[in-house]
Every structure is written in structure tokens, then in C-alpha cells.
Length: 294
Image 1 (tube, one colour):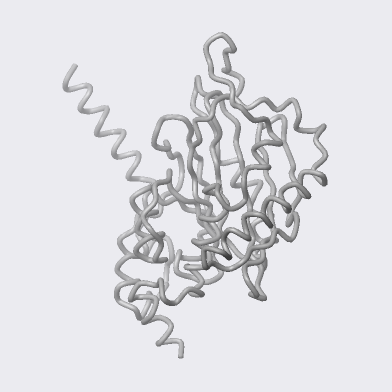
Image 2 (cartoon, rainbow, N blue to C red; image 1 turned 60 degrees about the vertical axis):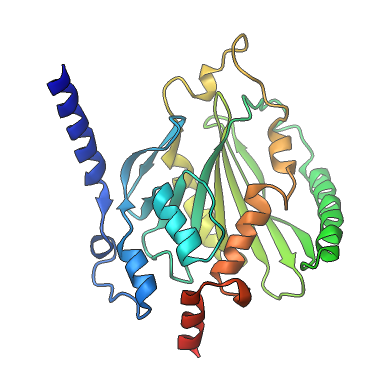
């Protein structure tokens, strides 16, 4: 039994490694980057495709050609070491394979799981999302006042960048918000995809700019198709006699505070730091990049 178990483990590790590609394999012919620290980080990542079992046992991915997945450790290297953000936990990130995480034109979808319980979708088609937007805008204005008093830029929820859409067959919800921070001319995109499961919600939070709205929208169906729940954890597996029911429905997922949810303020902060707008908070490699550009 021990020999069989060891062989099975070796086979599983081999299969997992088969989906991991090096920088050179993922971006053939790429010359690399002049900034040594950036080049070392990017060449140290495992760019994975194929079947991915996400940590926690709730969900899995099938990552096709044209995309790659970074596991939680490599995601931390990107978000913290490369983009200069505070350490955070996630289930990993999905990127388009046309770009490295250092390229300005890239976007990334950060994954996490919220064990809030089974979310009823009874209100998905009946809710007035125009009224919901007005409520969210009012709440954002109130939060913005608190931000200004604390010394941060104001924020304005401009409106839907993409209105809420729910796929009842796949039990997946997506919507996008357009936000304006301070007096900045470039507005921020906050695109969210939610997959409903038996015990909670798998979140995919897209980090990108308004200029990337069309690109992300075109990729959204493929990203949504990648995500599925493991056997026994699907929406259809819900048992009302055993399982926890979430305190919110589909409309409640959308109405969650724009700035206090991980998919709100944090995703915006990641984007702003990534794009190099908050110079005083950037790591040394970002400063070097700015000097090199000048």
C-alpha cells in the first residue's frame, strides 16, 4: 500500500508539474527586462495551464492556451514584490498569456473564496439594478467623505461599466463599476465575476483600467468557463437540512460596499500601485523603472 501510495503521489506531482512552464516557454523569444530585480522575479514564476486544483478544495480551474495561472506563492511575488502592494492572501491569479505581469497592457484576475454559505438566486432577475446603482453611489459618496477626512483622495462611483448579468445555468454573476479617484483623468475599472457554490462564492476580481474594458469583456466568457466547483461543492449539491444559507442574495453580492470589499478598494489600490501613480509607496524596482523611462 505504501508503494502504491508513493507511486500515486509521484504521478500526481508529475502531472501537476507538466502544466507548469518557465518564462522562456511561456514567452518564447522574449528578451527579458533591463531591471534585474524584475527579470529575476518573472523568471522565477511557474506559468501554469491545464487542470488546477485550487487551494481549499472548493473549486478548480481548466486553464486553456492563451492564459496562465499563478499559484498563491507566485501571486504574492507579483502583487507584493513586483507591484509593491502589502502582502495578501488569495487562491492565485489568471493572466492573458500575451503579456507578462510587468507589462502595462496586462490585466489579472485575482481569485479567492468567501465561505458565506449558499447564496439564493431567487432575486437575480427581479431586482431593479438602476435603483441599486443609486444606492451604491450614495453609499460611495458617504465613504468618500470619510476618505477625504482621513487624508485620502475622494472617490466617485460613475456608474456601471457593465451592468449586472447572471447566468442561471452556470450560476455565475458578473458586473463592472467605473470609479474616479480624486482629480485623476483616467478612471478605474472594477470588474467582478462571482461563481456560486454550495458553501460560498468563488470570486474573480479583475485588475485593469477602463481602457481595458473591452479586452476584459471579451475574455470574461473564457475565464468564467475555467471555473468550476469540485464534486460535492457545487450549487446543485446544496442540502437545506445541513448547509448554511448566506445572509444576502445575488443583489446583495453586487451591493457590497464598493470601497471596503476586497474586490473594491483593494483591487483599485493594486491597480494604482501597479501603474506607478503612487510613487512614494513604490518599491525600489519601481523607482528604477521610472528613472529608466525618463
